[in-house]
Length: 367
Length: 84
Image 1: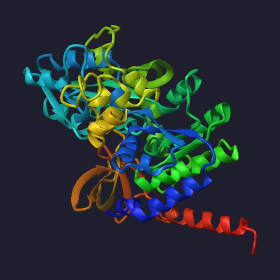
Image 2 (image 1 turned 90 degrees about the vertical axis):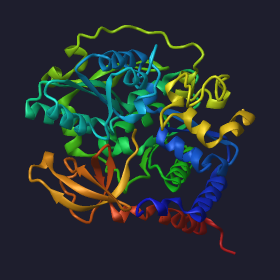
Image 3 (image 1 turned 180 degrees about the vertical axis):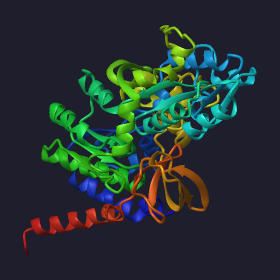
Image 4 (image 1 turned 180 degrees about the horizontal axis):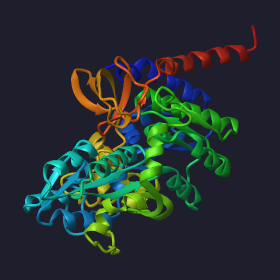
């Protein structure tokens, strides 16, 4: 496929690896923010092409993984209600809540449906006026415009049986939180390309300046990641801390204006708890007052409870880049994709799932 | 979740910008996609698609930079090498 296959060319990848090795003179730790990038790195073993002194730290960019337990429990509560159709992306169905997951609610008779797009949920609401239809809106800035358009269309159609359980999170505040931690080892970032395709690059400038870290907006194919690493290492070696755009074929400096405008209309910025990380100020999106009538938590009068995480799951440390998945004692033993302790083992972007899928037992042996 | 893949627009329908849709070809698999956020996109363009929405039109002139970057680095390195 055009715009895909050419970015997987092995010979160019080797040239990039040689160039990275040539310019690297000292140890550096670089975080790839997005779980999609983590999967590319593990799938194509890009980490093994890099010099030993370069460490790639896997970031928190897996929205499924950071959705707080309380919200999963709220989703389970709504999905189990009679006359309710609960619509979710497939990734969320096996994420463990405190007692069950959406798949087991479905098995117990709940009407849980996997949708490809938030607009599918709007369509289902139009076709089922006697049922309450709820969309579980999980995702970063990349997905927020799609949810925003679903809310906009539902309002325009006057749908009274449609609502949204919103769990959208924002990337820059999480990067700030990571950099402010005393344990932070990150010296440079590969920023999440598709988040920036929506939001643009400007909001990373203050982070780069304040913390003196290079931030390279990076794509998702092997050559994108390798070029992103090279650009980041060059900045580190030269003592620069700038925002650069490796992924300019998809990312404009100002992002996507119509998408940003709709996000601004439909959402308001709120503090949000990140699973395994804790509450981060101004890191979430909730429906604005104009769209509050579509807020599922309000509609169903859900109360906010704090639920303790299972102690055995170390996904919080994984999400903050403090340990790699095979360093968790439960990895591959008590915790597998079939019987996950935490969301990082379930999600198609979770770091634990990536290690389990692409490294398997070898990951354990190397830990 | 932020998975988005490139595809080629093969047809466009709808007048209102926020309800404009297109059929997008992903290497033989065709899906209907919202073009609400890419008002400039037209038939033949490649777009990055995420959860049924085109988020960005791919810029052909930027697309080759990943291959040119190494060449530029080589040329820079040659300039810096002391001449024999």
